[in-house]
Image 1 (cartoon, helix red, strand yellow):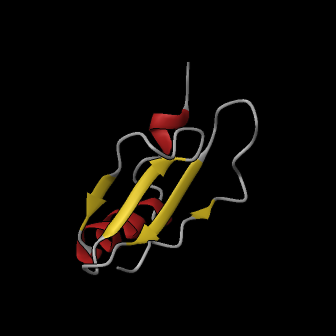
Image 2 (cartoon, rainbow, N blue to C red):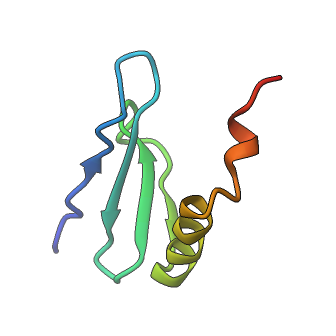
Length: 68
């Protein structure tokens, strides 16, 4: 059985901002917290993540980063 090859965001850091993604064996995409590799994995289809990434690139979620 193939094992997913996890890739960590270059923006991850030791203070808890740790995100990894991998193509799963069935072609879906997994997202997990790299500090807890045995913990839960969120699994999305490629079209679902493509739609999300397009929204991120368009700035549709920028307001969620503001704390004021």
